[in-house]
Amino acid sequence: MAEGKVANPGPLGLGGFALATFILNVHNAGLVPAGLDAALLVGMFYGGLAQLIAGVLEMKTGNTFGLCAFGSYGAFWIALVFLVLFVRWGWIPAASLGGALGITLIAWTIFTTILTIVTFQTGHTTLIAIFVLLDILFILLTIGHYSGSAAIGHIAGWEGILTALVAWYGMWEGLHAQFVMKA
Image 1: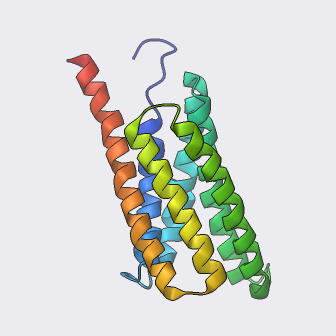
Image 2 (image 1 turned 90 degrees about the horizontal axis):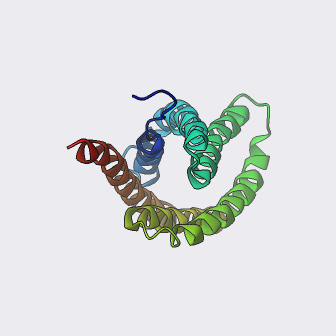
């Protein structure tokens, strides 16, 4: 790699996002009921830390969108993990989790909607698809949270699995582009 040149951090960020999203939503869909602990561990390090690193590297490439998206969703995963852990450890009353999670889901839905609108300016079909699906996921999670409907939670889980699969495709595109450009 040439001096000062930074590799494309997008595949790392998308990989972290996809894997953590997949594991959590396999749990949400009811396919692996005990999968929450695995989702928390992967969410902390690959969904959280790896995306934060990808965001910082996106800054080095001059990609403000990548910095904002990967940095923010990396922080989201870390915050989500600590929110759940703090309740488990008794540092936050379990009764307050519902309200905290509800407003968090609303805020992330708004944030994701803003990023989704911006993706349409890129013309990048996969990026648009990832963010449209992610926006739908946050909307479903919010509705499921406030309605208490297990069915909506399961639907959100399946939709989250689809979101993860499209994000993995985006990761593949980023990796594949490196080899196409060298050929």
